[in-house]
Image 1 (cartoon, helix red, strand yellow):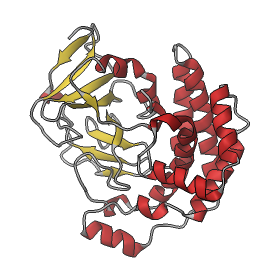
Image 2 (cartoon, helix red, strand yellow; image 1 turned 135 degrees about the vertical axis):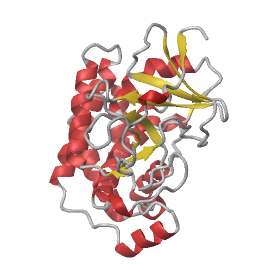
Image 3 (cartoon, one colour; image 1 turned 90 degrees about the horizontal axis):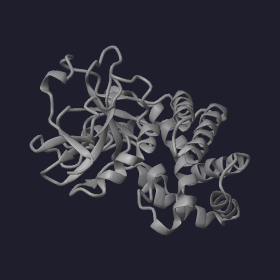
Length: 306
């Protein structure tokens, strides 16, 4: 296919650890601070600089808000136990719909980000959200919780996605990762969401292991290196990257079984890679993949519309 090299799996690169930790829970302040810093760095030499700078400010405010809020109420032990026994995610998204605490957090978030520089369409969307009736705000938040965002209303949902991420990451941070179990292929064991991307990590204790990363709650979970994150197949998995980039740090992991693809980031080659920020910044790969037979299976609310 024009514009790509088709790269085959290299079994010698698979992680050397027999059993890396299954789940890594987020530290909300550190998560959003690191993301903000990465967005800022990526904006420096990118044609997407205005958008990346905007997301850097948004992520920075997420970090500030996560640090200012009083401690979140943890998910009950009983709910965690039931979820574990039934191989379900303990963070129940559906139960958050209509939650007054989440709505209050969202309203506080919307007030705070108003001070950030942003393009006129974003300003208009934010102004409308700040004036929205509680029931309308709940409906929009419900769309975010369900990963069901209308294509004609992306700006408003982007703001609310960022607000809900703060709440979800705070809840996830209070869970014991040892209580989480795999649910379904490619779904976050904490909240049931699809991955934004996956990463081959280089940090101590999991060198060479692959972790899928949830954009909703910030949880990362271990997955087999050569495996489709959409259907679970280990056959027909390949890797595509722009031509002349054999050592590309971001590739498309493709599956011939279900014709889907998800980005895979090689953090073991570049430790500064961040699963959401670098997903957005590598938009060029998404645009190239549009001309292939594969559909994107990763979900990143900051890339909606592309």
